[in-house]
Length: 627
Image (tube, rainbow, N blue to C red; front, top):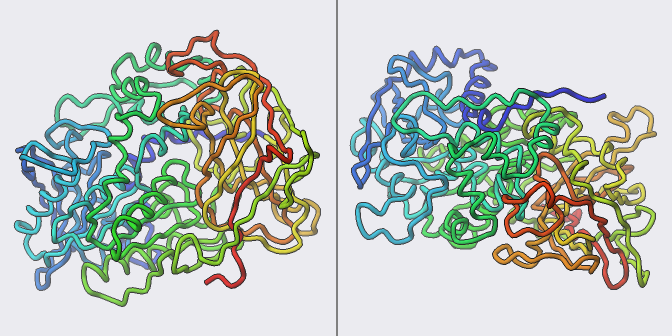
């Protein structure tokens, strides 16, 4: 049965992240009518706060009416609106989750420069300046500093301490604000933060997340010539069927010619920089995450299709470049922002057994800010608080990845077999024909954009296609827990001169045991893809030599997942995942964004599994002695 899902485009998800979280909070599980409580206990004030270059940023402050004590500041900076803009209106919740309004903070929301009612020019992923020589040398770090400096001096009854938080793009602003921070900033929580736009969101190792990028910039990328409270109106695509829509769209050059028509400036800039050049490097925040003094709690979801890279890389960069700073990682079984906009009990067909978001909010998020901003409660967070999918339980580790991990390799063998033993054949390979005119869909759902559920979708539909290779272990006789990073080490060739390689790690449920729920389900656990031209360098792409084997290494990001006894571990390899990922012409062209229809050709792809060219998946197996 084909499921019909009108998947909400990313721009709506991002614009509505706060609204979704607030709506969740408004459903009072503790008997409190939160919107009424906020109106009765908070006052609102609106400010245009001057930055060092004279630009004024629109900022809304919600402060407790109780003036008998002082409260810390808790700020969210965003390009997605601080609505409601009417000065007599209040949001239905305040802070990261519904617990914060009752706890008592001075909540601050700010439109970043160039967005909505703030002055100035907006710049996507504004590059960070390590050295600022004058008042005109601004970045998101300086804007955060200047805002906090004004707030501490001008907002009554604040206790001189401040915190930052934000999800996705606001997560980037949180991470940027931690650098060379104002002395008042004591705690920051970048959540699903964008870190490097050549590997986050739009790009995955040189491939373009087509449906995701198109739908986001369809709205967010349109110009804002003057301050406004209104968001741009997106184009009506006229269909819920993204697979057919993007197939009919043809080469990427048609996006601008047929739809954007030069109105989306960043799309044009993106297409002018197909390789990892200085334009993208300037938008990589990770090397600048130094001089971070506040306590940091980086948060993400195992099934975040957008910023999983940013979550782990931000945590790692802070850890490596700021010895001694308080720095913890929290990861749950969530889609992008799901810890704020859902109870975290399930995603698609997969049930995680408990309301994981509520656990996180009560036992991690609120205690983190309370401790560092109020001096309230003991600090009990471990280095890594992570949810173990498959076993459906929270785990606490004093190091991430966990220390008690054995590095192993799962090798591809003939007959679709996956095994820890290396292959012994002198020459061996499997092959398939990749046709850009019939790309492998990324989901069975009918959706115009990127669905949240695809990160755990049943992969049986792909296993049955002739252009997808599938390998699986024998039935597991005991639980196997994979922890930490996964690395694909591929030996491949193509009859063309360029190709994409998609790798998936899958949990195959038993299909014949009595009472088994989801019998035979092939749950996607981790996936990643790479444009083969970047196999040796993201700065200097190179074509394949037709039919000549080449090595391609691909990082799949971290996991903590238990494959239960009776299950199997599966690995799939293919060359298209459409329309989530754009189609590779399979004929090398200098700039894929300039490819013509005639550049798209069928290609025979080979995956080698011989003694000298073994394709394998490198994993970490967690031992029973782990924390």
